[in-house]
Image 1 (cartoon, rainbow, N blue to C red):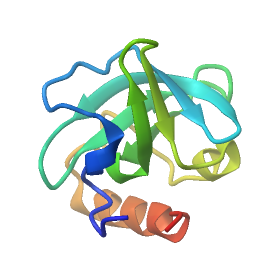
Image 2: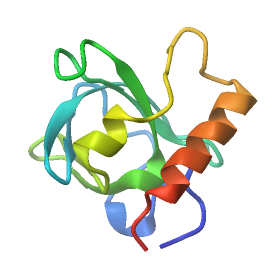
Image 3: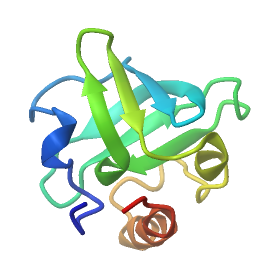
Image 4: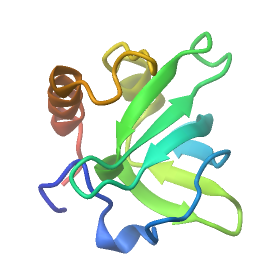
Length: 117
């Protein structure tokens, strides 16, 4: 797997410019929510996932490098993380943390520890 946690892996099947908003997000052990926002920035690609009632309406930021596959026919994004790994991720406030370099770093460190290689 590439070292770039903030970029989509070539095998994922993501084409820059594809609108992923509304896609369901699947962890390795089940559904976690829907894509609320996403970025295709070269060094800062990510998904913001609305987890709905699963973890009390929390939004989470998932670096693009955690995405293992995108199914455009079924409108699903598969991530290489468990529900618990996502639930225990750094607290995210979509109005405050987008573009925050410190949050970007701590989030990258957290997910970097949970990557499958």
